[in-house]
Image (tube, rainbow, N blue to C red):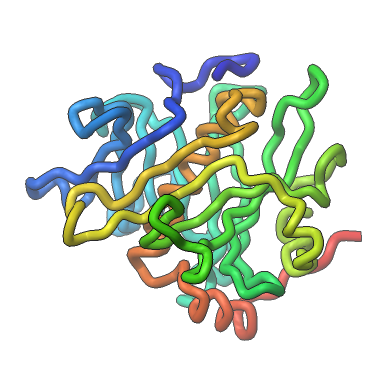
Amino acid sequence: MADELSFAYCPLPPVMKIYYQWNPAGLYSFHVCGTDQRDRLFAVKIHTGYSMSAPLYINQGIYLYNGPTTKDSLLAAAGDDSGLFRSLPVNNNSQILIPSRKSNGFTTEMMRAYITEDKHTAFRFSIEVKACKTMRRQLFEWRSINRGERGDNNAEHGGFRLFLLSSALGQGISSGESSSQGASTSSAVASKDEVVAILEWRFFWTSPKHPFDLKLVERGLSGGFGERWAIMVLITALRLWELHARGKSQKGSVAVAGIIGPKEKSAN
């Protein structure tokens, strides 16, 4: 899953399984694994904000390391919005830090939360992907798997599907449009969107150490979007888990935030 540059020390597999540890450190750190819990690929650490360490500082979130330990270099991070309204409990937006394509540092993207017209909780972001031998910014959206959409072979305990938004296909967009176009998704457009990844919650009583799986599917599985896109998918999935644990990915929380939280200006 190569891009112009290689960011991760090893390729991201098509199926990534998250496993906790049964030790004190497991309260704050765990692993992204491959085939099983012994196949530890990347370490993950919960950032409470109390340490005020970079790059999230006081903003609660999550760190993804480029190796199986928290002593490895940082690969990506995701945390609470660092804007004026970051302290509001109703602000469910996120800042996402991923490797920059142009330097050795990080680029900050935003992931915005809202409720779709057909009553799905959604988290939207944009990122550059490969398109006709060039890089083009595209919109993607994590959309909740509602109860009526679940089945024995389809996230029976819930989760999210990541869509490549059809309304943005073939269009160059700016990073700000990922928020300004949030509330405009209609059911007609959504029905044409393409699923490129699936985040599936696991049942606690049968998998207490294994909270969720992340699967790349269809065009997401082909590697055509590039390694940096795969890192974005992984860090945003981890962020959704962290928001879920705090009760901030639920429909009620996101709906209230949409009513009384900070408002985004629409882009012209």
